[in-house]
Image (cartoon, rainbow, N blue to C red; front, side, top):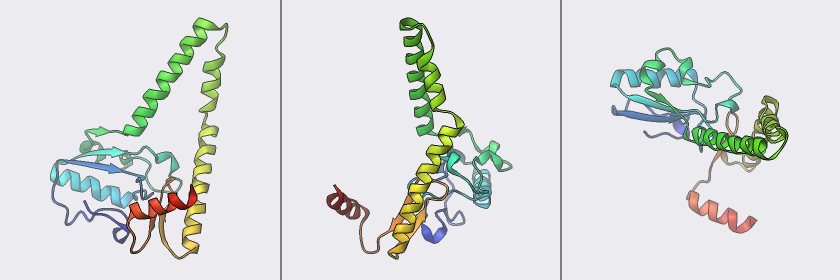
Length: 185
């Protein structure tokens, strides 16, 4: 499915052929676009009409701070179109942090008289700590958006995701990345 700034980073479903599986990420990496309620309603209708399965990746939904849906399950009829709702990044992060937590817990039981490591780990991931990290990344994204906009480049994202997408007219992304690394490292 083709998408870009001309379509607000959402595919034109009127010209998209039917498909068996739709992988959809919102907020999107790398554009930073979070799908609107209307866009997700269109996606669910498209999936229903075509018998498609939606695999919805919402790993960065905690960054959404406006009225855009954080989950496709906020859309009526979505449950019937989703055979799986997943986030590979979120799943791997969960598995890694769970494994780490279990190792620390085991270490705490075997080698210490208390539960200090497990208590410290649980405190690190409190709601306030997570909110602070999200705010930090969103502020960094805002700085990038403002900086690129100040030099008259088209910039998108950074509102509901930690990602910023910038158009460098006449340049390929690899060339811009290489030049940036060469000049800043």
